[in-house]
Every structure is written in structure tokens, then in C-alpha cells.
Image 1 (cartoon, rainbow, N blue to C red):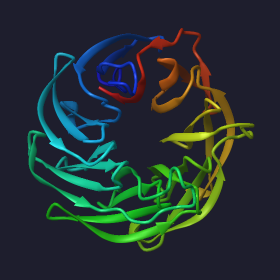
Image 2 (image 1 turned 135 degrees about the horizontal axis):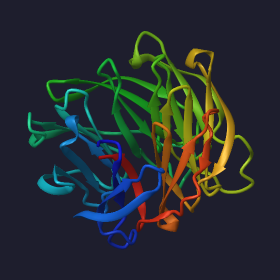
Image 3 (image 1 turned 180 degrees about the horizontal axis):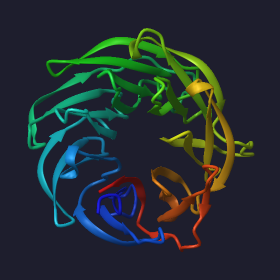
Length: 338
């Protein structure tokens, strides 16, 4: 049954102790079993499932980066093709019609759209949109660093650029990414990931400032404007705090923060126009990178402790430990439903 199995991406080859893409299963009590190595791969740090669930895409996060496509058969992954990408690709997503793969290249700051045929196979050459700009952090913001690319409901492609403090909007026309708008985030904030609320608001978690921004559409997603900002955690961290993931589930938004090693529940306010952080819970490991909310359950990848932890979602939206021991997975980074 779909939703009871998950793919886990990992870091390999000196960046971590993983071997590739793993498959885990969830028992009825919410605990996870596995992992099984579904495919050997080099640094498949981010994954995306194609329409229908029969295809999986993975980045190869290296200096000479790339992406790979896999067909899913009997719980195993069978590679069907590869494409080159920019430096250190760190995020991948599939457009709603299944016609394109969107890739964010952190190292080179580029975003690309790669064509897919009706079977989910790569076709044609990718279109590449160059990044630009920088920020005040001389280490993390010396140039553009695209960290996410995802399609909005109206077809607009939105990208978060940590290096230039920009949310960029593109229109995908005939396989080409055409820039139609840019939204400046607070200087030095480092926008990392974003999530789209049904109200039309866009929530952006910032890695460097540890905040969540609310962007409101002004005449569509090409005209986004920062209209609210709140802390990414309910309580001050008292130390290093580097945010990673942001996910929406109903009337709640969840963010993960490394250093503090917590997942924070945010309540949606004012019909989506504001967020209120209400509770921080320890992630159950070190370096919570990604999280996935699946109905009554939340699964968190703790990269630095080699664990995936499971929580039950309480009636107030706050995750509660299940009591099940963490599942050992080497260098887990991304979790998506299989």
C-alpha cells in the first residue's frame, strides 16, 4: 500500500557513509523497518517521485553533478538514464504534468529544466537559467546558490537562492525557463526551501537567519512580496541554528533546524497570511535534514546520527515520540513516499 514505504536518499563517497538510495517500510504502529539498499548511487541527497509513483529521480550531489532516473519494480530501483547537471545539485522536483524535471544546482547557482517523455525518461537537452547576485555572508553568499526549484499551482516555477537572498519566478515555455519576477528576501537570511499554502501564500524557511517568511502573491506568483516574518523556532536556540526543511500538513507547518536539532510546529494564522511557532520537539537525532508528514505520522532524517525517527502527530498538531527506537540508516538526507 502506497504511503507505507519510503525512499531515503543519502550522502556517500566521502560526504557520508551511505551507499545509495534505501527503502524502508512503516509498520502499523508507525515504527520503521529496514533499510534495504534499493540502488547504489553517488550522493543521491534529494529525491523526487514521478506521477503515478513508478519513477524516481535522484540528484548526484558532486562538483560534476548529475541526475538519474529509476523505474520502480518490486520495491527495487532500475536505472533508466542519466543527465549532467551543474555543480552540487541539491534539489529536484517534477512538474505537475510530468513533462519536466526541475533541478537546483547549489554550487553553480543555476536552475535547469530537463524534459521527460510519457514514460518518465529523459528527453532532449536541459534548459539552464543562470543565477546572479550575492549576500553579506562571505562564506555562504559569495555568489548565487540555488537551493530549491518547484512548480506553483499556476505553473510558475519558483526557486529559492540562498546565496543571493532571492526568490525567483520563471515561466516554463516550450521547455525554456523565462524569468518573470524576483522577490528580495531580508539581507543575509539565506532562503533555502519553500512550501506553497492553498491560500496562495508561499512560506520560505531561511537557513542563515533561522526565520520563516510569508510571501503574498500580488497579481500572481510572479509578484510575490514579503509580508510577514517569524522565528523558525518557538524558543531561542542558544547556539547554532541552521534551518533545513519546511513542510505543510493541513493547518500546520513544520520546519527542521540543525544545531538546535529540533522540529518546530507552526500554526497557520489569518487565512495563511501569518505563522505562529508553537512548539519545538527534539528530532531524536543530530542534524535533522528532511522530514515527511504522512497523515498521523512524521518521519525525520537525522543526517549526523545516521537515524530516521518517527513521531505521531498529536491532535494539536505537535509531533509526539512513539517510543520506537530510531531506525539506523547511514547518512540519511531525504525522505519521500514510495
